[in-house]
Image (cartoon, rainbow, N blue to C red):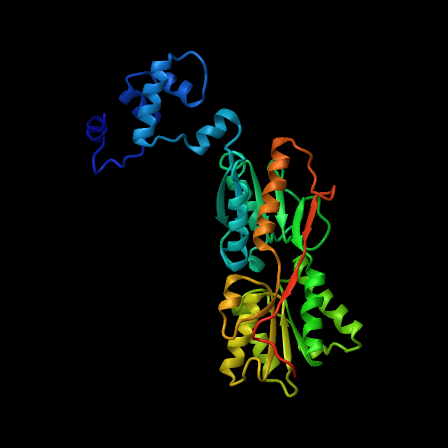
Length: 348
């Protein structure tokens, strides 16, 4: 059979196996192969075994589009991200682990480009993928609220504002309080805050937690020490430099994510400042890069992989008709955060 298959293909003819190829190699009709692939009755046991043998040898798989046209299901869940960066990569790890035993596969898809400059990327992505390539989607840090029609979705770290979309996030307020309280306990009072991407609920809540902890300690927030960094290294460099070259620079910085915190440490190093000798820095997320930074970054850990797992579980429940509820009885899963103290902070 292998010789027959080799003769059926040439270097100029890429060996993409079709149902017609399988039928020819097995000596049966296309209709018979279709019945075997879809588990329908009416095919002799010996023929089923022969067709399956050919499929196993040549690696035939039905296309997602063909599968969806036939059954109105693809068996694939989309994980849609604006770009592949440390946070979304950890989410993907948890999502991939969650599909085991569900009968679904995962398709990771990047909207491409800068999310803050490409509002609505998730709607365009869903219009391309929904119905023919994916049955439902997990949207990671979407820029808009509301679910596009026809495709069940779950949002991780969604846009600020009301939404009827099931969501998964971490306890951002508590995490920001922990970060700020840690710096206050070390004796810092001039604490700067580098905020996240405008429009995201996590960015709003982390600033809320920072301000709440400062107020609780009776320490006023200096407006000159609050900047928007946008969760990206390239959008962090300028505001971090402004903070660290001002006439009365901060002794500590709480950055709303690890990427911004690491970028801040790089700016400090370029300016000849020592971390933590001259400046203490705290981040948020606990991405793998945080522990590898020099010095290792003190940060707030949110369970990113567990968030990916929870989002997929919630989406599968929607798709399979199980109760569309989170464990707490709603459609919002909020996971705890914790402070991880490393070498980027020290007592003033």
